[in-house]
Length: 158
View 1: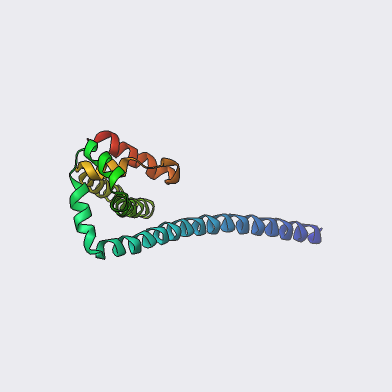
View 2: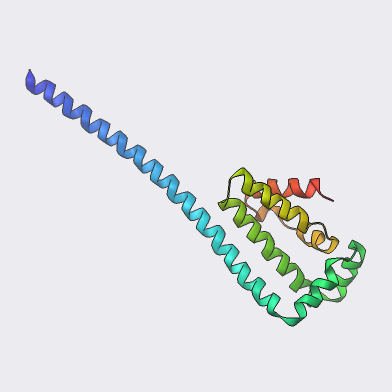
């Protein structure tokens, strides 16, 4: 009789150990997934910052930014058709900024961080030439949560 009770206790203990192990494994996988998502977001942002740095170190970049930065939309369309190289540099520069904002959104999730990011993006969109570039993106390429956040900012600023 004592052997049966002992066998039952060992069986319950081993089953409980397996359940605890499975729960621990689920928690670890979740943490690893979050860490990988964060690392990927910052790696992407760093890559774009490197490109951004290269563009900004180019002496012509300040001229390009001045040219497109405050133009009305109609003039931007015309300049875009006639000055493709400058337009590509300008849109790449602001594309890098958007990717940096996306990485910041993914990795800094407190309400205060999100509000600071919202203000930064809204202030950046204040110039017609920047807004034109920053609103004409493929939202399918964005993190879904950041895409909603970004669209809300676009919708509430003008």
